[in-house]
Length: 182
Image (cartoon, rainbow, N blue to C red; front, side):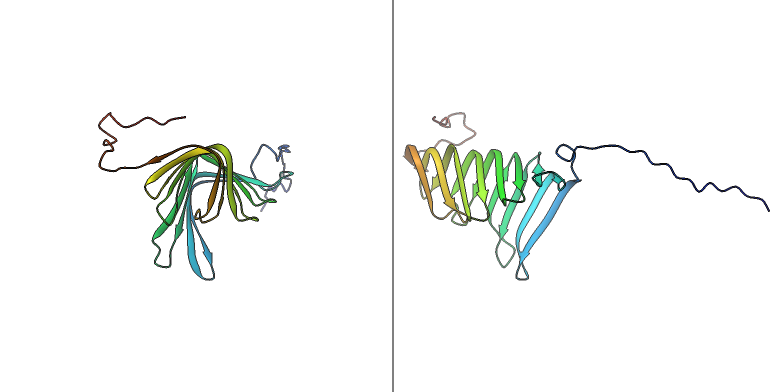
């Protein structure tokens, strides 16, 4: 019997820039985060890019991310949504960008175009315009700082405070809804 065997292998070398090319890209991500055996958070994102080999390792969520905090019965108690997000692994710092929408455990609503979340300091902050709906009033301004639970906050430059009267508010689909003031 005669046979032919080629043991040689050829490899193509291709240099990649770890600052521009992700180590891993994942699509349609849905994951949960547990603490002490209890599921605490549910996270969903259309795409997640990990840059683990970059000088400053980071993750990007270019198509947005949704995070839900869950209670012991797996009910959603707070949510965070945004158009895109960036996470600096070394600093444990999140940057949420574009249509950031947060609802906390008390039902308060916070909206802004940019929000930072420092996991080491356990605080959220922003210098961007912020809109807060809390306990029957709307508060707007610039410069925001809060604890992670969004239960205690400071607004540095308050622009306006409006009481909300549900009986006098036009239905949002009626075409007579008030416009956002800036």
